[in-house]
Image (cartoon, rainbow, N blue to C red; front, side, top):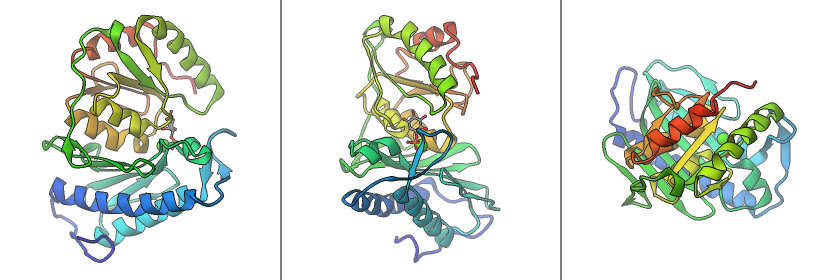
Length: 279
Ligand code: IPD
Ligand code: CA
């Protein structure tokens, strides 16, 4: 199926997760090719958003526009929420969560760790998700109940059971107060684990959990488009994902880890109030 030429539903349909994943994958591949192509020219920050260190490039905007146009053409009754400002109401109950470039700072600097991330939910319940790193040609995908894949091959989380030996990814927000609080959490956690990784893309962090490249990931203050697709991919790969207190992952806090260490990590993070609200 080709996005942009095939209308896949009308209001009231209950689409199959695999059908949604197919459309999401097609759109991500097209956007990824465009984004990678724009990287070969001069890349500069077109504007900043939540703080002077939170950039947006022309590629972010162009990719979001193309993805939104593709969804709207194929599924005109679906809602769409996107990082670069898309907030489109729908009537089908299906919601698309679009992060056109997650890891924009990496993209700006030419560090090959950025991703097109597209999730599809029935409301907040994710049923399909794709994360494409166009710099490495890694395509992570999942649909609910069908497991997770990297470039078509099944992936699964690590079987680590000892938090002291765990490699843990995390990320930091763009606001100074939030970063101060996140640095405090990090300095309490770091001496008690194997090490920390800060890749710079929440979507890829979650895929790293999904494929066992790290044992766990946590972050406070994400937006839903940052984590929606990666959450489903990690969960389908066997990760336990929550808000650190047993609820679903939220903008406030997200912890994703193999089942062997999730409880220990959640407890450790609660001890240091890692989910406290700072702004
Ligand atoms: C950011 C990345 C980063 C995370 C930030 C996000 P952006 O998204 O996912 O890893 O630490 O919290 O805002 O700005 O690159 O799309
Ligand atoms: Ca993002």
